[in-house]
Amino acid sequence: KGERNFHIFYQLLQAASEEEREDLFLNDFTAKDFNMTNQSETYDRRDGIKDADMHKEMVDAMQVMKFGSETVRQLMRLIVAVLFAGNMTFSTNKSSSGVDSCALEETEASLAVAHLLGVSFDNLAASLTSKVIFVSGDIIHKGLDVGQAEKANEALIKSIYGAAFDFIAERINASICAGRGGVMNGSSDGSKGSSLLRRGVSEREQSIIPPGGASIGVLDIFGFETFETNNFEQLCINYTNETLQQQFNKFVFKMEQQEYEREGILWKFIPFPDNQDVLDLIAKPRSGILQILDEQCIVDWGTDRKFGLSLYQNCTKHNRFSVTSSQRVNNKFSIEHYAGYVEYTAENWLEKNKDQLPAASVELLESSDFELIGQIKKYVRSEG
Image (cartoon, rainbow, N blue to C red; front, side):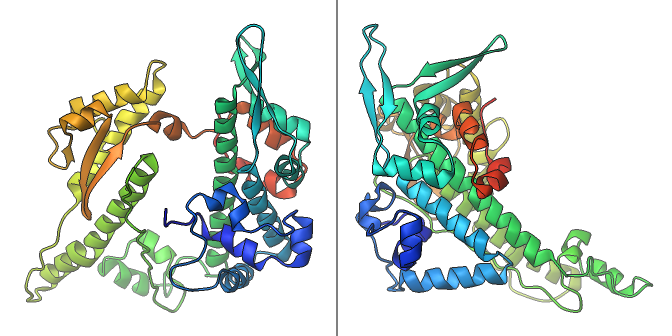
């Protein structure tokens, strides 16, 4: 409650023209009509900024970054496909053998997804209701139940959206780097490059300094998350925050004060909290929480419960990790982050950590005639 999904969903639904609405099957749909946007019952921004205005600014910025109009249109088409995918439903097929399978219901949402992704409805349905198993060189298709099909749909949604995000990031990076004239080495005698090195600027840092000028680095720290129930997603976000905080500490405090010492500048030492220990708790090789999670994902017998027990066995002595008797019973634990204590539940972590697109859905994307799908496929993580 109180939190929105990705801003682009709300922006597009507010700003789409009549032509876009017709082409993308949006008609009179609003954020209240999509499961991706209506779960929290929060639709407007807290700062009062209009989503339609932000959408226009975003499109203008994409054009500055050399995104063509057709690429922008195709990206918006993909976003709408994701919205409709969240509305797809499945029904159970009862079997005399007692093994239930399911079918993708032919609804307005599922038909829209098939069209927007450039695939047939039959291929879409098959990819989400069956699993491809490779046995001794043979391919076997096994039917899924409703719960498994819903998970397959979630994996498809995440993979498509994540691949589109990576595609956008790569295009922006390419646009920013274009025309810089290469590494800033200065005159042929290397004097300017040498002076940069004497000031502690690495060769890599020199390569991103525009010719004839300085550079400005922007550190965007995410919002720290703690809710009534905190899961794998919250740990990932909060780990990112911890990493960014460490980056901030390193450059603003550690490196600057080391520079003062080298130059003999008198100053009063500024104490600051060092969060390296919580980073080690989460991500240290062989003993960190994420490493323990990966180990449980690799073995066939790994479960969320065994993951929790492994955490209690390996992390209890860490001063940033804590677990009470009631938390042990409920497969929970707490971490003291730089922003405070957060209690996490360890349920569903293994499934979320695998985060790979089933082979059947990979085959689906391979069959697409949608140009953008062909461009983003290389960013998709898949099984096998």
